Image (cartoon, rainbow, N blue to C red; front, side, top):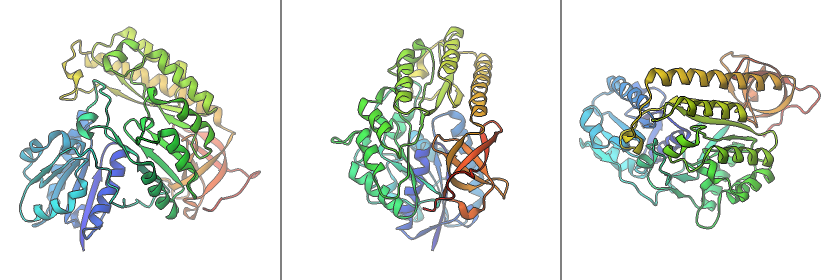
Length: 438
């Protein structure tokens, strides 16, 4: 039996794609290993969203090459592979395979040819590719990712994704439901639907609201999450489904990027500040108690202090539960690469620290207010302390509870007893139901 080792970097889509890769390679006689030293095939599933992500991967590829024995193969797959293509193969002589996100169906043939001494690149976009013929390998966790849409037709000026993931296309609703049914049959009760602009899902007949309703009806599925939506694509039908389907969790990751309408226009985000705030109001009306996280870029070309202050004021007005914050990173080939008025890195760094401080202050206040309240958690895994389990609420709050590992995969109502910042502590609620076995 041949062994394959895969390291995954980047977004949830890459995590899901790693499951596809394991599934495709399993059909070709490979078994998974967690030790690169014993692997016949090593793959690095890469991200290209920021320059430092690529630099990290380059360094890791250099480290993995020491595990190559005669006949072993080292491949780079994913977005960085798509972006660099032949240049990556030419610049790293110890790499044997470079495969973009649309090339995984043929990975068995590519590996066989590479074993015969060829060095190969497959970065062709395949607008029909949804990998329906591959059964993804589940990672054994209590929650699973399900890709419902691939690619992106938006052209945000800072973003490399349309160039690495290709045109947007949606899977057929029936195919998505069939995959969720398979996942549920294996005892998984929570799924996260994935797409670059997931709420713009449309298979030509059904939209994202109809998809939410269909997935929520699958026997055994108790929680449905999705990421990442676009603020412009929350239609009335999608909002209604979120309100009506009890399995849809009360959390949305809603990328903002900037609180300044002027900067948003330069980003080609297709909404302004007021539009974003209306979307937030609509979400909160549809799902009272919903929590919101976001992405924010500081230091985008041309961002003034006034623009940044607008971002701070919006962050405080919305009151995000969490935010992933970044300094703008130039991506070769994106429209923003040609924009002038670059922000001084020291200024951008200072703005980032101010933003982080505000986000943490807001989150801390919200978290303290939750102490003493009850919530349902799904126990996911052992925490760093062996006597605690990590669980997650429907609103995406991480809670540590003293429970044995045999409780992983089960649901329980707990009472929140404290917070340390990003996580909570809790105890089983003695006044309510005990563990729910699924």
